[in-house]
Image (cartoon, rainbow, N blue to C red; front, top):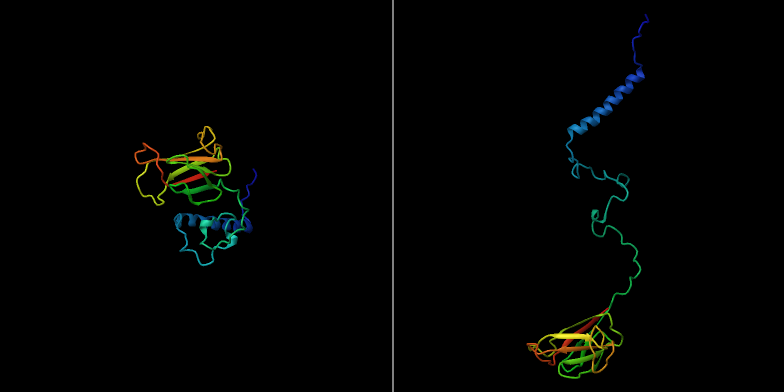
Length: 188
């Protein structure tokens, strides 16, 4: 019968086991004794969180006070917008104010106005609305369409091409055309 030797740990094994027990016991204590999310800004000492302790790219603009972040380099200019050309027209057909390049062509009848925009308006948004330039009386609707006999407008007696717009202003009740001031705008 072989004799079983009694197991005797070496001093280094004993020290290693003690170190492991203390290490595991410490984290176990922290996990049990400190409530979750209980350490916050009040518990942190000044300058406890340094740049080396913050994960790269984890902060966003909202984490900084206004003016704390430097402005970046100015980017290149973007493409030009669709642009808008507009005019304010009196009841007699004269232009009071405008963005430029618009001229009156004709006033063929009461409430009818034809304006030249100097370039094609095909495919662009045309908007017309009433104005109060020296005329505060009641009035009806204002309508506008591109000349040239296209699907976008109508055939005009003067300036019958897509550079021109015909505007019609109506009296109150919309039964007859009447001279009234209006705004006209072309966008695009």
